[in-house]
Length: 66
Figure 1: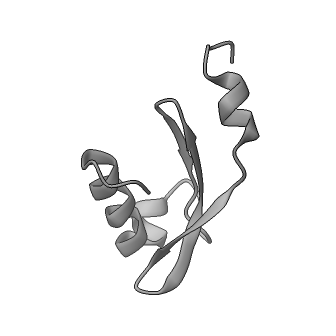
Figure 2: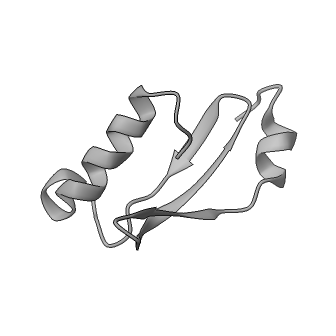
């Protein structure tokens, strides 16, 4: 994707994010773009991992970083 923040975003490594002290997935973020995965969930993430998916959505809606 062509975008002014592409270089900075590509420099960021994937980081773990946790829910209840357990690995919930991976994330990276720069210049307003965030990628987040939910470990062990497919396209039905809310069904497969409801707690982790809810935490991800609540963090997305808040100023707290993932």
